[in-house]
Image (cartoon, rainbow, N blue to C red):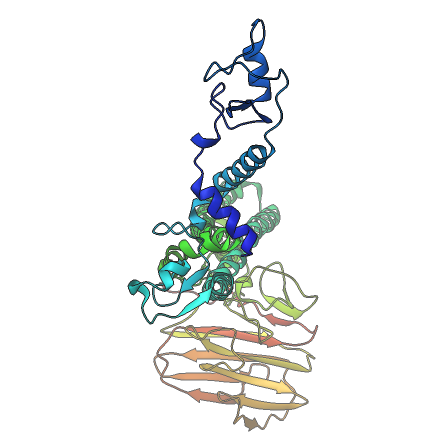
Length: 476
């Protein structure tokens, strides 16, 4: 601070507002004039006082002035203007910028007490041997620290936003699935006689009920995500407002801001809803067989129905869910049941007991794999433990339960069809050629989990699950 500024400040401190008040208007002098009696008044106040009076006297001491147009009191005018300026500045200054103990400007930040202080505080016993930083440096450092604490919340919010987007996409996909499944149901029922209308209505009702149930489930999931997102957004918004505040205000509220961020628990990442999609296989699979008792006519039955909710996005399934081939990439919603590393699809029903068999027509496909996969295996892994399969690639057949150690198979005749047979109780999974009734390979394994039929193809050549003659009966 310059010597002149300091002198003015000390002078202002020694003069009270009462000393600078006009006796007439009781306000700080404006354009003051001085009478011969040494009393001063605002020029306008004096003129109003004299107006209409025959004798112009001093309003205070009643002495008659020697002149009717008294001179300006320039020294008093300058003093009053300086006083008003300083008063206005003090009134506009934030009280937060002044030390509550000493009235001095807060220019330092005590690192030990984590609070702004003035130069008098610095030299006091309270802050003896403490470390200090300039207020602007401390504010910048602590803003950076708070920004780092805020980053996990911001990243978590992004995860929730992505999850919300996937929930929205899943909800839309449920609608698409429901409409498409409804169309297929109706087309199949059109092939049947008119008296099956009642059965058709019953199945449509079941579909509607599942659609409503799963749509409501997604709404609840989205609502829960919105609540968590709103909580995170509020915490972030409040912290960002603190970050935009003036340095002193920020530092004074810093502890509370840090506490708010640190006390906000980082919620676990939202999990994809398992089983959220419409169970298309339940509605379409074995539809003719399921109404066979009512039809009393020949109907088709396929022992394995493909699950579209598990199919890799590049795989296309036939309308009756019995054929799979590679096609154009689709964009279904993220789904825990879906393959994303293997061009594979599973059967809709798993087996954990009994004997089961089905035939797969591989035809002239140059690359394919069929087998079974354990239920608990995650389907987005580069290798699939719990997978037992026969693989055909580059003219060679291999048995593969360990991708690193495939076993070569001797197959004399190129397979057009392959039969898969699971004997759960005898711990055997066998593969054979149904055209020549020739055994190909058998895996012996103690299965502990539900096993699902597995199909893999990387070309447009279809793999088709063949129908089983209705002379075969099912037992429940």
